[in-house]
Amino acid sequence: MSQRFDDDQGNSGTFVPDRSFGVYGSSNAGYGVAGTSLAGNGVQGGSQSGFGVVGTSGASHGVMGIAFGGDRNGAGVFARGQVAGFFDGDVVVTGDIQLTGGDYAEDFDVIDSEAADPGTVMTLDELGAVRVSDQPYDTRAAGVISGAAGHKPAVILDRQGPGTDRRPLALMGKVYCKVDASYGSIAVGDLLTTSATPGHAMKATNREKAFGAIIGKALMPQSAGRGLIPILIALQ
Image (tube, rainbow, N blue to C red; front, side, top):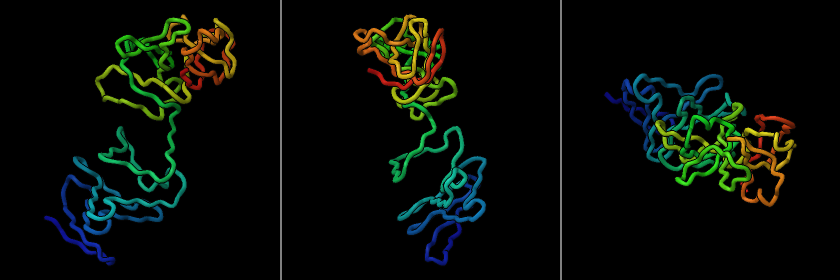
């Protein structure tokens, strides 16, 4: 059974007791759900089978949260979960967007995905997928599999959901990459290209061959042997 309510600011709405909603609010002119607190939660709702908080409005905000703190504990709206937020429509942001990930990646179909672990250098395949690189100065160089050394991508394009054999390929930003310094000692700032060692980059010493086959720049040195170092992706 629904219940009407009116507040001291002239807003009215309908409260619908339902087991599927922790908190429900509806308004034709004001806020669907509004809550303020100086120490705890302004609005809190819980549900075992539906939505924790639902707010609808015909003229203003469905749900609004305001915080005066500057840290993560003072967020106007806080969400946690496998999918922390889902938006069916446009999203408008008037401030900065802060992302904790290190690179800008895109999901690609991968040939022989067991060999394509994070940090692996990949090249384009004739069928539009990517495969582990194994040729020096390969102009088909596509990027590096993101996620090595615990560094997650900040943005992943072309996600197609579970059940697909795809990997995020870092195309821009900072990513950890497998390198082989047996072809030449790697210093900070050295240009890197594909090598004959599967999935590993090497120092580009032949500038003519390197044209179109550059993966990025080394951000840490690798004096000898194989290793995993951060690089700045710069495909060229």
